[in-house]
Image 1 (cartoon, rainbow, N blue to C red):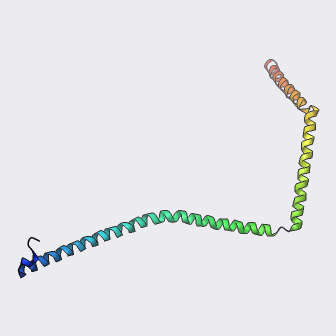
Image 2: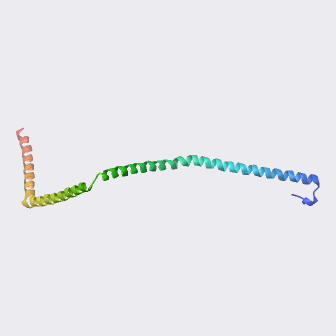
Image 3: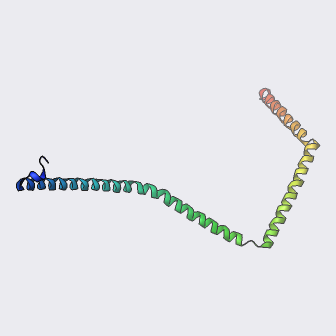
Length: 141
């Protein structure tokens, strides 16, 4: 405004009001365009990002379903075990432990008996026979 409103005549005042109305209208249009551009940007980003985020969520959901199914199957298997079955399992494990100890003791006795030296001797004999065989093939044809 170049002049004071008090000093304006009616025509100048009307012209100033029209200019002010146009500025306000232009500013509103700019605001609407900016908001529309922001909204469009948000929509485009959502369309791009949401599938990328949903894929791992779906994968996790499938995995959780599989885990729940595995737990259900495990519950079914465990529900079949009664006390007698558990006692039989304990007896079998104890028997297996005893058998393992007996086998270990037997292996220790075999080590002490010199079988490992016999094995080394047999391997040495095999090597000697192998080289003798190749020597005989060389000369014997």
